[in-house]
Amino acid sequence: MSEYLSKEEVKQWRSSLEKITLEEYAARLGKKIEQIKPTKDIVDIVLQGNPVSPDRVQLHTERLDTIADRAMSREKEISSASFNKSANLPKTEKAKVKAENLREEVRIAFKKALTEREQRVFDHLLQNNGKIVYAKDLAALLDLPRDYIYKYIKNLRTKIEGDNLKNADKSGFVLTVS
Image (cartoon, rainbow, N blue to C red; front, side, top):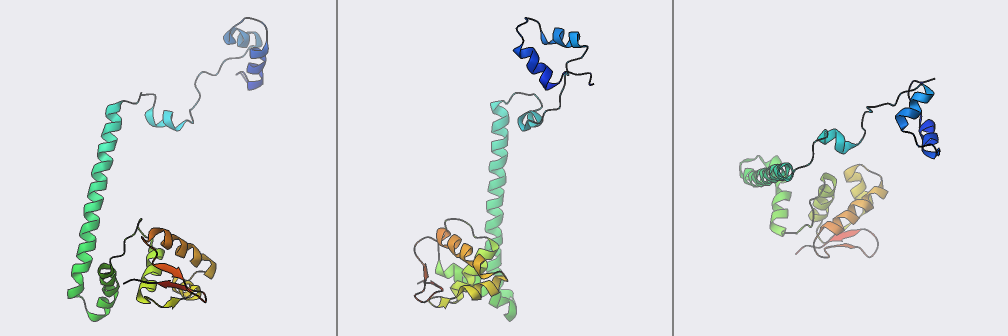
């Protein structure tokens, strides 16, 4: 028998018609009321009982803004640096940068950033601009089952501005970029 009131005993106290406090009810049963319970509420854990002040929210918002600004400037540095490096690279590395330069020349607008695999699919489609590319070829490129490729094609269609990625007449996909 535990020394604290159980849930069932608290329910009995609530449903009883007697007008006594929970402490008196626990004393009758020879038990105690458990005073402190560890909280599992994430808000209480994070705030530790302190009220949320607008200053604290403002501070976090400002920090997030500065982090986002630094990330954007760093991304611009990286992207401009990678394009500038292509002139100093040996021939084997120039081929890798050629695809990035082609993307820069083509100027396709994306609604959202591409994932690494979506980028690889897009680069393959771009290299075969105007030609039919089959799902089995893309599956071999990503080393995935063919069924997974359709997910990446669907995501590319939603992320590419305009109607540049179409189904071919006899199956496969065609990316048309002018």
